[in-house]
Amino acid sequence: MKTAEFSELKTVNAQVLQQVLRKLETAFVDMSRKKMGFPRFKNKYRMRSFVYPQLGKGQILKGNQIKLPQLGWMEYLKSREIPDGFKVKQVRVVRKG
Image 1 (cartoon, one colour):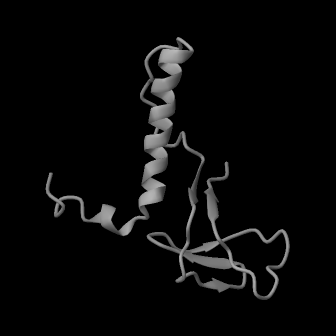
Image 2 (cartoon, rainbow, N blue to C red; image 1 turned 180 degrees about the horizontal axis):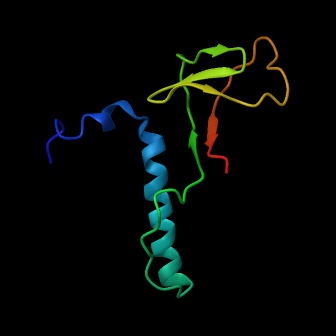
């Protein structure tokens, strides 16, 4: 497998990509322990959300928008103001219906 073929994967946070592998692992563990049968191939829209567990130092907040790697500027719902001196450590991106 050449890295030149999948250059887009280098720019995505590795922890975000690992979430899919965790779900697959869970499906196979359930198959053996709970006798649930083989995992089925699901629709690509099945996962409603994903998490950026570590944003790093380069986060930028502007009003009700945040700049995420690979996605760019995203709006978010402010349930409350972020106090001075506090940092946003993780972000969950949710697809709404």
